[in-house]
Length: 214
Image 1 (cartoon, rainbow, N blue to C red):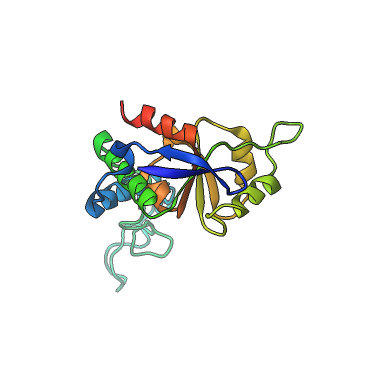
Image 2 (cartoon, rainbow, N blue to C red):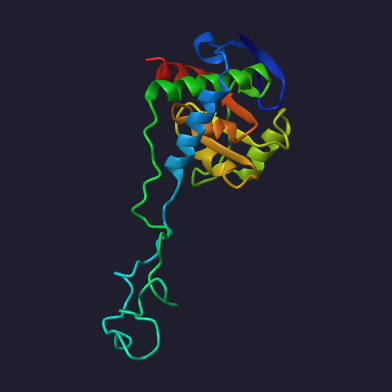
C-alpha cells in the first residue's frame, strides 16, 4: 500500500510504501475487543480498599451481656451490622485485575488497528518532525500546535509516534488538547483506538517493522 508523505506545512512531498504484513491485515472486531479489554484492565489502578471487621479499630469488649437485656445478642461493635463496623464484600487492594496478554494476539490486534487507520485515511506520514526548541532543549507547544493545524488531524485527537524517544516532541505536545506522543516501538491497540489519527514519520515505519516483525 502506498501513502502520501507530507511535510510540516501539510504539502505532499512524496510517497511511502507501507508493509502489507502490518498495514493490510484483515480486521477482527472480536480479537481487537479482547485485547483492548485486557490492556485496559492492566492499566487499572486498584487503590480502593475497605477494612473488614478484623482490621477496624476497637470492638474488643462485648457491647452487653448475652442474655437478659431484651436486645439482640452482639459480640462486637465492629460487626458489619454496626455503623462504623467492618465492610462486607467491599473493594480490596488484594483483588487482581491484570491479565496476561499473549504476544502474538497483542501484535495481531495492533496490526489490525494500524490497517484500519491506513484504510480509513486516519494515518498521516510526515517526512520529518523538526522543532526549533528552547535553550533548555524543550520543544515549544505553540510550534507543535501550529504544525498540527496544517495537517488533516486538525481539531481531532492525535497520537504522535516518533522513531525513538524525542524529548522536544514529547514536551511540545503534552499540553495540547487531545494530543499525545509515544515511541513507535511502544504502540498498542488500545492507545490507537483511543485516538482518531496516528501521526508519524517515515522512520517510524521502519521502527514498527523492526520491532514487531521479528
